[in-house]
Length: 120
Image 1 (cartoon, helix red, strand yellow):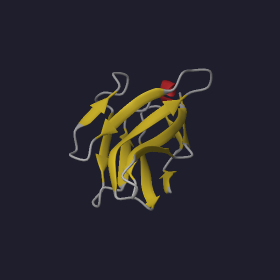
Image 2: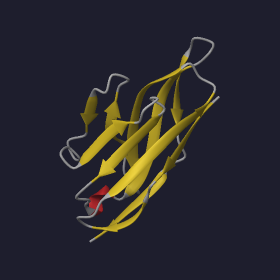
Image 3: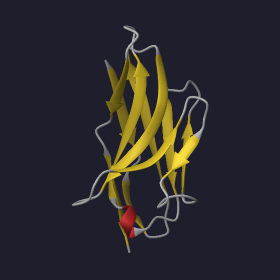
Image 4: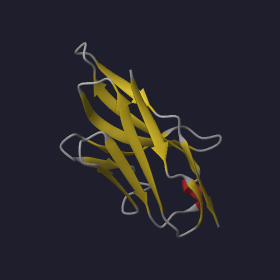
């Protein structure tokens, strides 16, 4: 099994910054694409950013230029730098990853989520 553990959420005032991190652990052959989703109360889940194993990145238009996704050495960590935060960024942020398992199958894994709250 593969587990994802997020850290780094919290409370911040508008204009502030946070850095989220996510570590993959368990039994796997490789961690492929990784990304971050978020879900605000009463809203649909939103794909915030993704990064491939070759560091190709994509961003939601709502966070372009303010958020930066990156991977750590060893490819089992992903970070999300959140700058110039706005109250509308308030949400639970979930890390996700595609893992290649010893069986040869690929599976999607989700973290438990970390709360980001931005006050005006």
